[in-house]
Image (cartoon, rainbow, N blue to C red; front, top):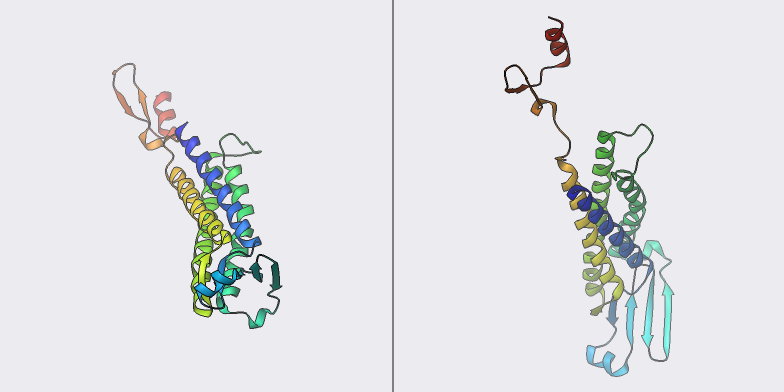
Length: 216
């Protein structure tokens, strides 16, 4: 029961983290930049918002965005962050399917405990890769933006990416830990049978030897 609860907790955390990564990828409020000094921007109430796909100007009377369509002229941190976040979003679907099919309550045709174990391990590894991609993107992007322009503050998209990556890291770690060694699966070398004649427990012999002794 505790094993299943840990697996469900890891799956829910991973799914919530995947949603956070998707939100961060789809929105453009990663960092708030300022073309002038901070005091001038505060007085003019005009800030710039930069994301993976567009640069926007935010003011009380204007909200205008310019799409970043010129891929070859974009900075390296923008292109790399795009690629990593897209990979994280795409890896989420097979990872969630594998983790879902490894649940004890889900039964497939000719399904075994070993196959469930392998699916859970692969799904947990994919979730950890998602977390690494998200962490690298959400750390590298603000550093690169700060080197290009005056970084004033972080946007909600960046916070969403941080939270989503952290949840994926937590969920993937829990899934891998609870499937690393399943205490509910007995091992044959640790099995014993009880002898009525001797009254002692002896190790279980291989099937061939046991059948041979019974025949004698």
